[in-house]
Amino acid sequence: MPWYYKEGDREIGPLSKAELRALLKAKKIGARTLVRQDHHQEWRSLIDVVKGSAGRQRTSSTQASADQPREAPPEATQPPPPPPPEDAADASDKAEQGALPALAFQFSGTGGQYFKIWIVNILLSVITLGIYSAWAKVRRKQYFYGNTRVSGGAFQYLADPVKILKGRIIVFLFFVAYSVANQFFPIISVAFILVLMLFLPWLVIRSLSFNAHNSALRNIRFNFSGTVLEAAKTFVLWPLLMPVTLGLIGPYVFYRQKKFVVENSGYGTTRFNFNATAKDYYLLFVRFVLPLLLFIGLAVGAGFVFAPLAALLVAMLYLYAFAYFTVRSTNLLYNSAELSGHAFESTMAIKDYAWIVLTNTMATVLTLGFFHPFAKVRAYRYKIQQLALLPAGDLDRFVAAEQEQVSAFGDEMSDFMDFDFGL
Figure 1 (cartoon, rainbow, N blue to C red):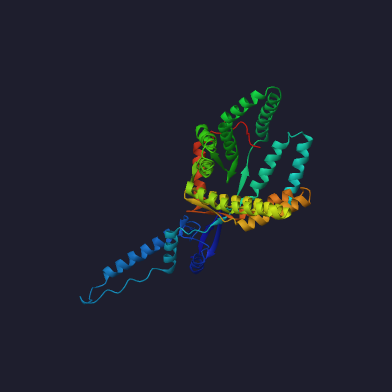
Figure 2: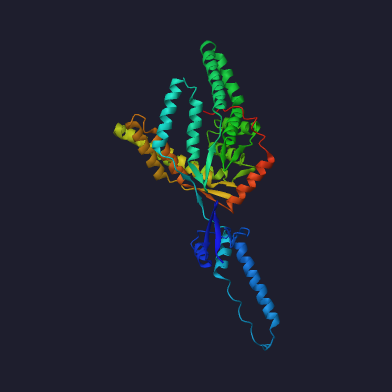
């Protein structure tokens, strides 16, 4: 009887048992891949099918042995048990190791497509004196989200531009009031800064909540559940210790901020976990600072000998610093995140990303800025292509379970999302 297996939403088959075994050996399917032999049967994981088959074989063998007379002499040794079927052994090893195939993230957008969106966004934003910028943000995010896929599903950006516009108007009015007060009553500017610090945690929560709530994958929204008190500790109180500790607490502050964002984020009803430690971030900063000090020393020394050489070293220093910190912090962030056992893997390389940044910068300067949309797509595509999802089990079942949970729970956060402060 032919076999069928599921790959995402697709049913692939018919296949012979030998073909199924070959796919398993080639690691194109795993122990938890859903299979069945007939369209009327239920889908079952391959390891369950193999165990069930092995169990039936053992039951039949035991029954047959019971029906046979026992004439063997007492001193005769029992023959060794037959080895398990090859496909059962492979599937068992696969299940024990949890080595399911990685699901690569994909980006299908192009610089040419985004250039059209970018140029229209600029023109309309200028013509409308910035009012259209809220719609420009939505169009931009919808393009990048819609062209980013994983396991056959595309991301969605669902924000209402009017709500973004409300947030921007409030921010604009605040800074206008600050500028006027600073001109006529300089002492009041200090009060404005204090007010901003008091409201900063609330602004952070609102922005993170808005962006998460309006992002979705397979019709399931993301969410953010952090509190204002937690945000105050993370983004105000801890950074205030920077001058007192001469900056030595910096890596710990950075770690706490990343941990706060990841662990308060969720997909449907499931929250993310963050497995990095403060030690990981201190190592990241140490490996960043030591070469940085070396570059600075070389640049200062070169300045006394040949000024153009010093300028070149400074440019190389900036490029290295930007590429190093972006790559290492991004890899650490994703490689430490987890969603209900499903892990992530980011494999960005400093050399590759530095080359992209360098060539993008040169091309943008030489084209008077018109290469910017191509540069943005190029950098984004590289980041996405180096990202993969490492499933701990059947991803379709997890998504289906989340859809049921979300449907039962209801979307109680929608009324809270009035506007966005993020630019």
